[in-house]
Amino acid sequence: MLDLILPPLAACMVIVAIHSYLGLHIIAREVIFVDLSLAQMAALGSTVAILVGSAPGSPTSYAFALGFTTLGAALFALTRTQEKGRVPQEAIIGIVYVVASAAAILVADRVPGGGEAIKDILVGSLLWVTWPAILKMAAVYAALGVFHFVLRKRFLTISFEPETALANGWRIRWWDFWFYLSFGVVITFSVPIAGVLLVFSFLVVPAAIAFQFSTRQGVLAAISWLVGIVSSAAGLAISFKYDLPTGPVIVCAFGAMLTLAFLVRRLSQRAA
Image 1 (cartoon, rainbow, N blue to C red):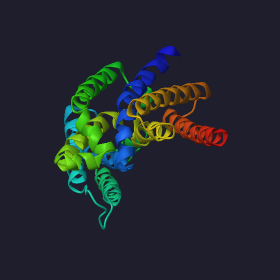
Image 2 (image 1 turned 135 degrees about the vertical axis):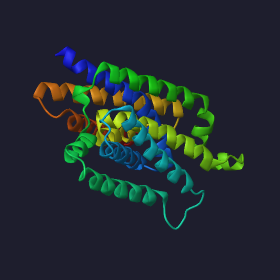
Image 3 (image 1 turned 120 degrees about the vertical axis):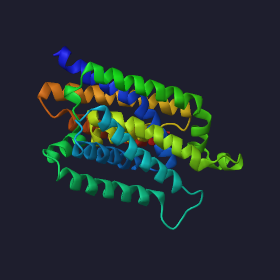
Image 4 (image 1 turned 90 degrees about the vertical axis):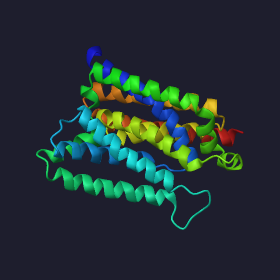
């Protein structure tokens, strides 16, 4: 059994390492559904790649997915405003998600086995992940981790203190593009393995829990990583023990952790 559970557990740990950190930026920026939107753009790119004759998981498929997420990153960077506009950016993000989803369905309709491809994109293939795929994903994420570490002052300031970035005269849209592009690369590699729904949970739930207990960036990262590790490990264990679908169980485990965190937070406030 250990041989079966170890690869998906390792994949979850790799995904948690970067998604839980990026989730802090997403919560701070209040663009919660940007993950789903970029994930759907990546899914659309993968579906188009299949339409033109590329195999799922091939370099061409990844290139198409990254190309479509780059378009999404550029759009989200351009639509960011420093003041409250007539149309909130979250509305733009939602529109991109809906249009990309509809386009993916239309493309899949012209692809043999397109319905199965859409299902795989939603739920992923976590149980069947291989060590080469995990190592490739880990190498990409490590490079992106270095990228974010080098530019951490810019990205953290823009996410957590945008007024300071404006006062310093930074080109926020330019830096937003690079942030969303790096985010899109992460999504491109994680969606085929974990699926859209689980990737969203990895990104948002640990960060949402962390913000219940602290506003310090170091503490936020520590709590987010810990929650991601515990939730994914617990979900995998329950899935294997009771022979349940892995992705949905892990998503439910994240939901249970979020509920528990809210209860702990409320109880601690009453006690104080």
